[in-house]
Length: 165
Image: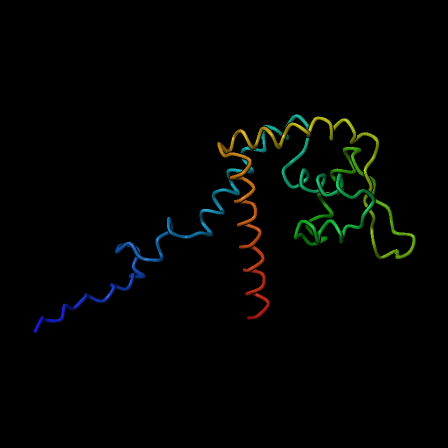
């Protein structure tokens, strides 16, 4: 009769970072995403400086280029920011002459943000930025599209998990 071979049980990964476990910083997806976010901000900085924009201001302008004359709340919803964060940013854009802020006539509690004529040349200058970032990424358009989809799914799943807790 053949002797049964015992297969050693799969060793459970240790939580001790010194043992190469799950708590190693370099194994954390959140840290990889955080590092990528920092790299994006750094890559955008020299591209946005000639436009006089910071990265958060650029994101707000992208929202406004998609849908002009919208509420601060709508901008905040798109960017995941509250009005306390957005208001100073929008005030700086207004001071630069790129947007105007007015009270909504139908609901004075709401502030509407609209693009000014001055932003048209800014938008034209900004058109080259996505291609420059694609080039800097070293990735193909297909790889970027796949990564974008994966990150959107990750964000959606994490938000859903928070909602069920």
